[in-house]
Length: 316
Ligand SMILES: [Zn+2]
Image (spheres, rainbow, N blue to C red):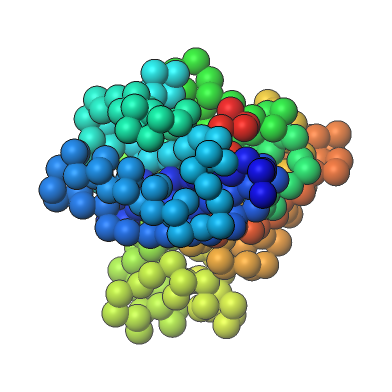
């Protein structure tokens, strides 16, 4: 075996997940261990190095076959310099991670933020396989995004492109403040947090809904209630879908991507969400921008981060 392999690192607050990919983006092996955030930056870096060495050792591949290591991190990153500027969940501030890892591993290293890396994973070997231009949404606690143009992550001027959650979509009268400080961002309505808030508001208002029987509402309960025909829940899901579709119509007018790929916990809602998003997109996007465009669920789930991180070596 002489083929090159690539290791992707998904650097999370509680666990570091690593995986080996081949040059086609197939995930061949995975390994996971604690991050060690409490023990500080040096321990976290020691752990990354340890897990990368471990996974290659445990695999049928040799260290010489390892062509490079990519890492995705939740936070602000300076991609060109390879510095993690601020990553609160692992306690990193101004850590020149690329230089440190390159020295420790003696391999090329690249880093990027988790949303871009997940988008690259989907584009490389997930729902966007074979598609050169796609836009990925991750609907979770917040709304993350990544833009792939000509097969590569589009970074923008300050490396901040793809902040899809902060596209302003909600009209002023209905807008609430987003975590970013601005009003009416997509994240306020189409994230799990937004959906839960709308459900709690409906219950507090006294709307007739089965959700009033739920002690602590999660997004899944809202989807289940909507699927069971609960009209209040359907209205909430439709609202989340409406603004998502509206944002896609705006993005389509700017980038004309071939696919919109939607992942994250909220995407698990399935057809009840996607049908409405597609309907809204068809209604709002100019017709020539709809031709051949698909709005589809992500495929890689939690592995998107590892695969995309490995892909940084080839596709960024
Ligand atoms: Zn915002």
